[in-house]
Image 1 (cartoon, rainbow over the protein chains, first blue to last red):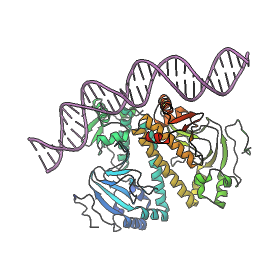
Image 2: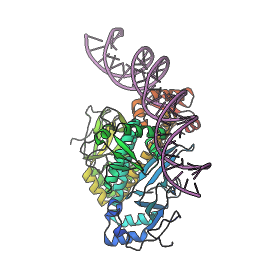
Image 3: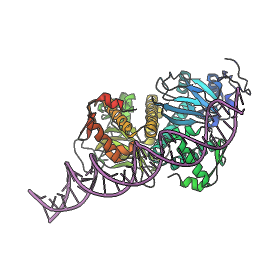
Image 4: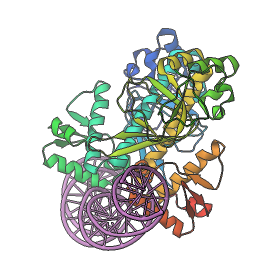
Length: 245
Length: 245
DNA sequence: CGACTGATTGAACCAGCTCAACTCATGTGG
DNA sequence: CCACATGAGTTGAGCTGGTTCAATCAGTCG
């Protein structure tokens, strides 16, 4: 409930503040998120519902199966969404980047767990309040529908990757996808940021850490990419695309 | 445009008829489909939009990348939804059973191809007309949202299957899922119908035909299931559940 | 510095794939 | 009615892409 010092690096996992109706208007990722549907008054109303939080790396946002009380909009940072099996096997079902929405669920509980990868800022909403807002606001409902529909498309593409692509192809597609996603949120560059661990990439692509590491090493050896801190630089886009199957 | 003889077995792939406002009301799968949201007048209006078609086994409904003009509601039969790679590899992204909706897409083109597996009856709608109807009808829009949201959940579960489960586990989960889906549309039975080919199951589970066949044989040898024509009978539900990982 | 955590590399292994043969229906037409 | 073809499913035998296990390397932090 205490005000957030927006520049500070708190040790606490959460620094909270209810919106005052001004933050959303100047939000850097608004146009990439579902909030793009809103203008003026509605934006102020949304802002009043939003709790702007900062979350430290490696902190869980919520767990699979837990009561789904909140939904989140990522402002900065990266979040991994994953499902766990009883024996510890993990499948990452997605990475949420700035502008992405997460926690949406029709069921009463979360279908997956969510953990912040690097330090992140998020907008937290009460699910019921958000649902009510969407009920009153046709455009927002449409944006939510579009978003979830897009998520489904991505999930179906991921099925092809997991079911039918070779390790080499999976990594290539993954890199290109990340490249494209960062480009779409205004971070177009030959350097692809990879804030997540190799183990995260592995659990996303249905491989082991070793295979991911070996594959990236091979691509670097073949001068397709260059491994840099926290990412890779694309050296040969043509070859990278050719590896995608 | 000709009237459909509802009992006949035509050789033609399509037997069409525009609704007369009465068919939907007595539709056997209505309560399992998105149409459950509608009553009386709306149902008549929906029926006017619907083209009731019969489609012979192995007939494509539409192809991946094609202009997405129609959406479909399955009344009877089974449809496979799949993505193809340029080299012929195939990933089945889902099976549409009676009551299921398919062809929904925000993009102008279909994200996957669809082929009827066994002889099927479907309701075909023009995408634009359906979109307009959903626009005017709050309940229908909600049902569509629910449906697509449910599809996403299924897709994410499939990611776990494809990314992290062993062959044995994949087949066991698949059988249980089919069992549950048929149960939900009123065909609860220890016998699980499997109208699709082994090759379809393989392409759905990210395996080969041989592995699927061997796995089913092994389960039969272990008296977990009994292979019957067009399906399997569950002999030991506990063991089957235990195989799911 | 030593203690971690994450990434890389090597070597042996194995689950599932590939290739091939065979079975078992179903259909067809002479 | 049988001969034969065709499509689907099963089974075997050997192979291999990716895993597993283990060692090493490279930062980072207290």
